[in-house]
Image (cartoon, rainbow, N blue to C red; front, side, top):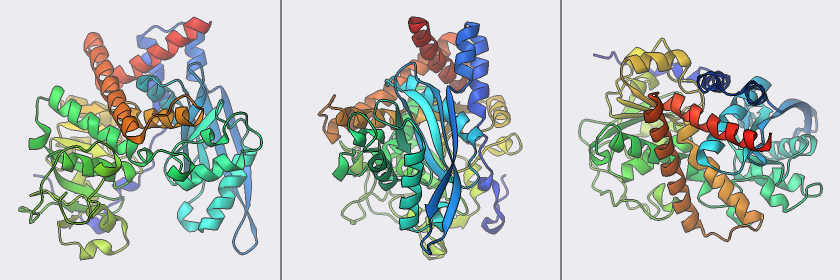
Length: 456
């Protein structure tokens, strides 16, 4: 029996993710596929790395300087695209690893983009709104080659739709084409898609349902799920799976967790999947219709978990340590926290039959090996987040005049893209007799190699 952990002493979720892992996975896949040496060398190393000093004015009039990065890995399939994040301790090595992962994800999503990643070494929580705006504009003006036909930013940890809007506006005078296409995930008033904010969670939720039902032979409506991390991806995934009939029995932020009480007191129903993502992410009229008969109320629990001290006032579950969420006896465990969650040291405590990464670097290579020895199915983030890049591509196409697609149709296209990506990786891994991570990297790499062979 698992021993409960005290929430006040829980530190597992604050482990920095190993973002260099995608490079190792890509190299291993290249060796297994016998990729030609010249193409292998081209794909193992970034085409361009930028590291700059970013000065910006603080509210008190002083000048502060932060380190900023942008790493562009490969553009053989199209312009670069990738995450832009604001996190403390961010390094150019982190961005390089994320760039590799994004290139693979773009290939799996089958969008016409290459992979890139970047951001700023800062803690956005310590900056005012005005300071963040000045920092963002300073970054966008100093990083070269941002633009709709060269490198497109996508929001990530510490950034949001307003960050994307400011970055696009800052480069308006120097780019060719519509400057609004320099970033995806912008506010709707600037032509952004209302579906983008929840696209990552939507993608992960579809992967959980597809793999759970198709590969593990279990009905989602009878399944139990634990979600580790209340990021936008984690919270959205929890709400969607809840709406689709699963029971969310455990949920946590980076610092504290919730376990469902033995008997829920909800009185609502699960009315199925709505047509647009916006309507899938919560109970809009506040009447409690999205509360399931048992499990955690996913429409309100994330806000209590994220608010300092607010969890003490929540009565819809039992406060617990985050490690208890990892160790929950469930059908599926979603890892959507900000750091590494599963390592070789704690993998033996995982009791879920399916683990789906909702963030890059959530499972280390050692943790993966232990989970596989326990016959746990592990789906990597390069596949589960394919829907986010699909949504970014659809928004980009809207801005450059290649699509007049409505938000509802964009939501449907995103769903089809995720389902197709999972189906493609499933067929590849069965044919090659490999796991989901190996299969995803092999298939993504094979598409990149094919593109390089055509232009060779």
